[in-house]
Length: 131
Image (cartoon, rainbow, N blue to C red; front, side, top):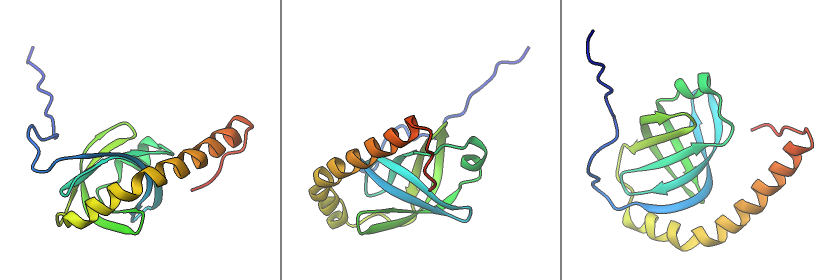
């Protein structure tokens, strides 16, 4: 019997500091637009959570645009774990983008939380909003 080796695609060291967020955004792919929560963000990439997770559709995602606030970045999926994904941006974000995201995030998180609460209320009543 051979030993199974599970390869990890997550980096052991990070090139950039990560900004914890929890802000809603969109992932634009060839398959369409997906609603996401940006768990954290750095100049080099992001950790995202697909809000409407479909395992088969998620497995097809590779290259994409991440859009949040008034920003967007082209990236490639570097790892997947269920509805969670790691993105590496093709070009590092400018420090000003991180600074402005950090400045606007507390306002957006409150607004996003209200939106998520409304979606959850609809879902509990059997209404399933589309993306």
